[in-house]
Length: 248
Image (cartoon, rainbow, N blue to C red):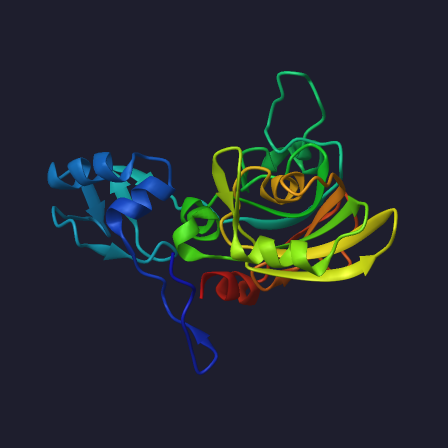
């Protein structure tokens, strides 16, 4: 997904490939959309096109399939402060509460960008934009997520050094890009960690590998977007500038 372009304060049209437009509108997958185009069943502004490279402006061009108008879906991007004790799926086999109970009913179709487990809390995005999700979750893009972990016992700097070097635990390698010891005491310590891959339970398993248990885990930043003063259980929409910063 390309962020909107601006020239002299004016937003330039965001042109997308016709098959992507059809997929975003829920008409067909990209591959099936290509077949519709090649079959001459798609028109743009009243003119049939069979060229796969055709681009359209979702806000201005009139697209139809078999004569039926196709409307672009409005892209929605939300930031939510997930409280502890909720799952990120729409339905849970154990009937535990979900984050969707915090949203308006009309946004029940959104999907979470990544996951926070039942006992974790903090910043999570929800959207209906699949490419946005891919850019933020696939390891090849390396979007960093920052966590604040409260763990039992005293954490020494040497332990954090092992985290940044990477370690193996139960057959899998885990690694933190950056760590910072926020506070340390005899009973518990607080550590800030930056991760790039986001493997399942990665923070918890880093500490488990060193004989420590995470008592509280909070995600406080994704890319350049901070949790800030967003209260637990509350959500807000991301601004165009924030979306652009996440995709740049």
